[in-house]
Image 1 (cartoon, rainbow, N blue to C red):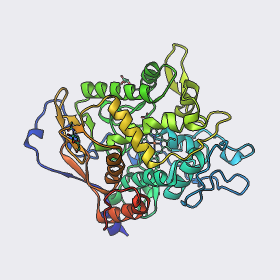
Image 2 (image 1 turned 90 degrees about the horizontal axis):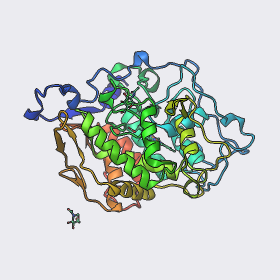
Image 3 (image 1 turned 90 degrees about the vertical axis):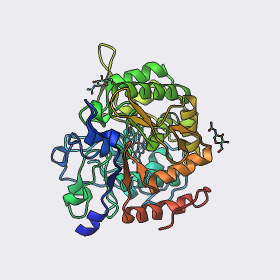
Image 4 (image 1 turned 45 degrees about the horizontal axis):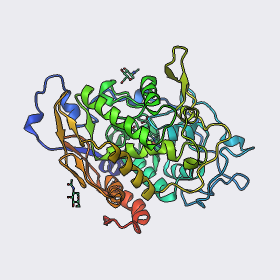
Length: 413
Ligand code: HEM
Ligand SMILES: *[C@@H]1O[C@H](CO)[C@@H](O)[C@H](O)[C@H]1NC(C)=O
Ligand SMILES: *[C@@H]1O[C@H](CO)[C@@H](O)[C@H](O)[C@H]1NC(C)=O
């Protein structure tokens, strides 16, 4: 098992670029390998709850969309969550030993016991929770869970920490050889220009905590309506901010996932989804944002489903997400690439991205989402995140059935 764990470790392969040496003020090792910076919250400081309890089970009285054991549910939403009387899915604030991370959608799910409350979840819990709580389509639920577990968790146990490095609990062996850094890990899924989280290198590795200043910026830009137009503008502002301030700024192909996450604010968070209002009370509830006396914002540790909330009627699927990713991007197109020191931007090429420019149809984005999970993708200007064969086999095993009718060339391994 130790060997398997070793072989399944994601490795960042570096290609030698002579220009990447000796740039004053830049952490060069960090540019090469997102894991080589030692700022990331390590296992030793990651909360440990010895009382791991799985997600609250679903039963025939409160079936939600009927998703169970990682299988598809009915896709029929418009359901009140938590259902009246379903005390098992009532809100419970995380304690000091519970792990939370950069994703408000999953933090909220854990706070309501749709995921394990300690933040150590697994593939099935993730697939079920996304369907039952948010009425995310089975295919999109599998895609996101595969990205999470495949890139930041353990493919043997299927486990994932929704925040910091909890390898001793996610891996089979507890071996350091197979470190699984959790969703906090930088540049696998987590990336620069988040809505409310700092850039990794601007905050000594804290890319996961809620930042009230950033939430305030988003609130000002959106002015009470967190719709596509306003969030696309805010994404653009965050891009400009990171590009100007962050000498290690990296905006790689996977950053399209952040355009997708932005769409969740108006597609998934409002009561009844797109039929409801992406207003400030709704968004602050899911983000755990609370006004301070001086008019700023702070985290209240209560990422919660708002009162009397219903999930969306129609499931949100991969094709709809691709359409939103493209629309958010095209509202304010920016160059993909990164900084080698402040003010020194280099563009990159990958898939439908040429010299930093994304030129893509909705269908190209559908296939890009598949590629991001099944190919070696640049994780920095000079490094490529290499998927070991075991990970690739596991990932394609999960995603090929989901993508088989979506018109993308599939990898067979
Ligand atoms: C298995 C499923 C999921 C995984 C693995 C996942 C993972 C992540 C990660 C790693 C981030 C950080 C990206 C960044 O750097 O900003 C993130 C952000 C985010 N996620 Fe999730 N997520 C999942 C499902 C969901 C769901 C179901 C929702 C909403 C219903 C959601 C809403 C968001 C939002 C709004 C953000 C942006 C937060 C911000 O930028 O401040 N996610 N997610
Ligand atoms: C929050 O974000 C602002 C703007 O990027 C930054 O100046 C500040 O240092 C951040 N605060 C924390 C606590 O990280
Ligand atoms: C975008 O791609 C299409 C189809 O491949 C091509 O015809 C078009 O010239 C491209 N546009 C730009 C701006 O590169």
